[in-house]
Amino acid sequence: MSIGILYERSETDEMGIKLTAEELGIDLEYIPFRKISIRIDKNGYSFKSKGKNYSNVIEDISVVLNRTQSKNRRLFATYLLETFGKHVINPSPVEFVCYSKLRTLLHFWVEGIGIPNTAYVPCDSHETTKDGNEIYNEEEIADLIEQELGNGEIVIKPDAGTHGRMVSLAKNRKELLMNIQEVKPSIINPVGILAQEFVQKWFYDLRIVVTKERGKAPCCYSKGLARAGFKDFRTNTFLGNLVFGVKLPSHIRNMAVKCGKAIGKNCDAWLLALDAMIAVGKNKIVDDAFVMSELDKLATPFDVVKKVKADRTKKMDFQSWNKKLEESFQNYMNSEAYENVRKIIEESVEKNRYSIIFHEANSCPEFWEQTRLVAGINLALPLLKCAQSVAESSYRGERK
Amino acid sequence: MKTKCPECNAELEVPKDALQGEILSCSCCGLELEVKRISGESVELQELTIEGEDWGE
Image 1 (cartoon, rainbow over the protein chains, first blue to last red):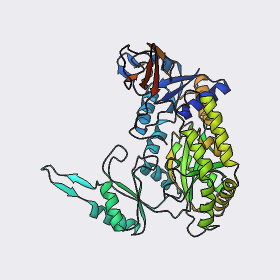
Image 2: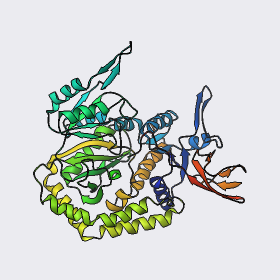
Image 3: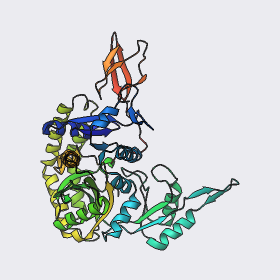
Image 4: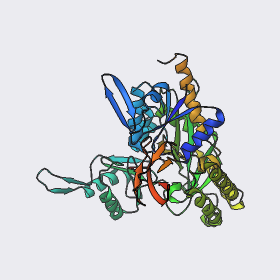
C-alpha cells in the first residue's frame, strides 16, 4: 500500500521527501490540495481537480503525509482525510494544538514545562458598536498586560503567525500601545492580544525535533538547529539569521520529549519541530563583541548559501541544485568562524540547560535546506517511518 | 501548443493566442504558471509564487 503526500505547492521539502522515498523504495502518491474540489454526499466522497479524479488514489492509500503549508488548509486537510478513514501525519489533535501558540503554551504549561510568562487578553484593540461608534481599547489592554507582566520589555505575537511575522517588541508603554494598536483581527490572529515577557536569551534560540512512531516511545534528536544573530530579537532564519548544528544535553532532550507527549497525547505517530529559548540572562560565556565578529566572518559564505537557496531553477533540476546547496553549506560549516560560534552555543546550552523555555511547536517544519544540512536531520526519514508504522498496523488489521 | 506541467507532469494545452505574462493553471494539480516566452510552437512557463494566507514554518 502506498503513502500519500498532500501538498499545496511542491517545494524543496516535498521534493526532498520524494527523493528520500525513492531511495527507500517507498511509493508516494502526490495529491494536490488547493485547486481541487472535495464533494461529500449520500454516496460517499470524491476528490477531483478539473483535469483529474483523485478519489481512487485517496481510496487506495491508508496514510497521508500532510505537507500543506498553510495552517488553515492543513487543519481542514487533516479533518477531511481522517473522516475518510485515513491516518494523517500529523493527526488532527496535534495540528489543532500546533495551529495556536496559546493552545501550545497551555499544553506545555499544564505539564509543568517552562514557558515564557504569558498574558492573553481576549479583546481586540479596536471595536465598532452596533450604532457605528468606534471603541479604542489599547489603554485598557495595555493596563491588563502590564498588570500581569510588569512594565519591562513585552513581546506581542499573533496567535497563529509564522516566520516571525507581526511579532513586535515593546520597550516601554508608548511602544506597547503602538504595538497593540497594530494588532487587528486577521487570519493569523483571530481575536485578542497574546503578550509575553521578553526572554533574556542570548544571541540564539533552538529548533528541536521530536517524533513518535506507532508502537515506539517518542524520541528527540540528539542535535538541534541553533538560529543565531544580533540583528533582530526574532531568530527565524527567514529573517536572515545564521544556523548552527548543536548537540543537545539530555535534560533538554527529555524536556522536548515531554513537550511532544503533551501535544501528541494518545496519537500513534507524529513529528514536531519545537522552538525553544534559553534564558541565559547574564550567564554569557564570552563577550558579545567576539561573537559578533565571528558572525560577521560568516556573512560572505552564508550569502553564497542564500544565493543557492534563492535559485529559481532549483525545481527544474533538483538534483544539481541539491548538490550546489550541499557544497555551499559544507563551505560555510568548514570555516573556523562557524566552529567557534557553534562551540560557544553548545557550551552556553550545556551551562544553561535548566533555563530552557519552550514556546512553539511546528507541525509541518521546513527541513530540507537547513535542518538537514546543518543539524544533520533529514525529516523525510522520520516522516516516512511514522507513515509506515501506521500503514503497517492498518494492514495488519490493528486499527481501532 | 503543448507542454508539461513542471509539478505533476500532466500535459498542458496552451492556447495558440496566449500572451506573454498570461497566467494559466494546470487542470490536474492546480499549479499556476506564467507564460514567460513564446517562440514559434514552443512556450516557456514559469511557476508563480503566490503570497499565502500564512506560510509554513
